[in-house]
Amino acid sequence: MRRLILVSLLALSACAQMPGAASLATARPDAPAPTATTPRGFVAAANPLAAEAGLRVLREGGGAVDAAVAIQAVLSLVEPQSSGLGGGAFLTYYDARTGKVTAYDGREKAPSGAAPDMFVGADGKPLPFVTAVLSGRATGVPGAVAMLAQAQKDHGSARWSTLFKDAEQLATEGFVVSPRMAGMVNSPRVPQGQTPDAKAYFTRPDGQRYKAGDVLKNPAYAATLRRLAAEGPSALYEGPIAQAMVDKVREGALPGSLTLEDLKTYRPRSADALCRPWKVYTVCTPNPSSSGVAVIQALLMLEHTQIGKLGPKDPAAWAILAEAERVMYADRDRYVGDPSFVKVPVEGLLDPAYVAERAKLIKDVAGPAPKFGLPEGAPAAGADATQEPSGTSHFVVMDPAGNVVSMTTTVESIFGSGRMVGGFFLNNQMTDFSFMPVEKDGAPAANAVAAGKRPRSSMTPLIVLDDKGRFLAAVGSPGGNAILSYNLKAMVGLFYWGLTMQEAINLPNMVARGDNFSGDAELFGPDMVTALNARGVTVKTGQNETSGLHGVIVRPGGALEGGADPRREGVARGL
Figure 1 (cartoon, one colour):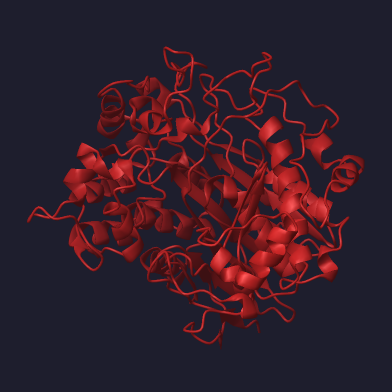
Figure 2 (cartoon, helix red, strand yellow):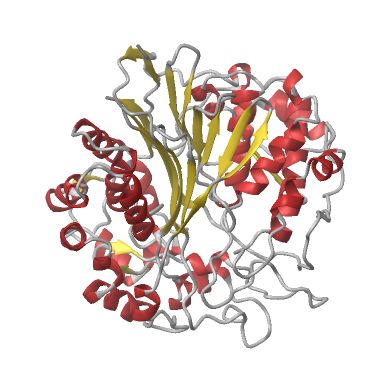
């Protein structure tokens, strides 16, 4: 019988204690010891309340997708800085009966009135990013709920109406504000927290902002959930909630163009996941406009390096990882967009000959920033000017039958656009497009704005199959553009360096894109930072990377090993 080995971690703040340079791959000192139990289900999510909601669904006989609906409903309440009903998501699903991996695309879509120059000012320059984020133009048609409804229809076993009980109860009776949420609520550096809607929601009756440990109620959200439970996803895309969204984005300067028709006609996408052989495994991700193709390309390039013979204490290994990331981003930034609008050369990017050629750029010292390559089928595309903040969340669910959900979900920036309806925040996903539609030479940006288009996303919920096509691992992270680096680091730790899931998650993060390097300097330690700097990988003291990795892996003998990122407030738990 399988055993379940889970490390359950709760980071009490964004600055949770992490391992130092002397123990780059060890668990947090105060983490509970792994425990072995009968595996009746597993959840790793960014908030204990959300994880418990998913486990409750599993206890009552629901499947992985049923649990995902419940988890998202709670996250929208207790982690509104990261995801919610007003946002979008990608979901990768493993069906244990058929062995098939399906990718669900719930990415937000540009309204029908969106225009390529909508974020260009009268002076011909891009609007200031914060100005764009706080405007009505920032909000795209939300897709997370529609996507979850489609996935639940395809693979769920519970009644839709039963999946919102935990979130409704928490919204009605109140929930304890977590340290991370409180930090965002009270940070002067979060402009969305200063909007009228956010001020009204986050201010206590005594006029003070909510703090960690306070109990916050959200009766408006409870009412939304009751309607959603009773009516299904149409409750969000038609009727009074839809009208409230339309009205909200039309307020103020730079109003949005979202219409009731845009909401009513939104449809999620589903297709076979993008899967490729790697080592003795198969790696599966969502299709573009997700950037999963870039992570697969990077993994394939690393097969041409010595990284597997090195380890996490060797600066050469981290330099190789950084250089692989730079090549990965150079191609991703140039070519990935919505395939309904631009040609994304997926086959060319993953062609073995092209991968081998690009891998030649990867050294154990940093050179000049690599230029984009020219894979087979590459269109003429301009340089990218997309900014992508890190207000996102990731969770993993495995049900007793062995079905697995790996899902990354977002409202884009912290608290999205700062505008609320029905007790939840609206996304600012339109600012995930390139603000400038063309390059100076006139070449179009692959991620330029267009009506009905989905912005490129770094969200890449991964699923890995073993050499017999059975589920082996699932992992993913929030982090904006850095998601690709965070996921890549975890995969390297797991499959090149032989670490446990928790050890791989705990590893310092390294993000290298163009001429910019960033990393968890304090976690690397001064000696490693010095060694990296000597190799041209300029990690500076004081830097940190707030990933939110969650994952699970099947070990020999059937043991399940889970992990949750101590940089945030997540937990990994089994029934």
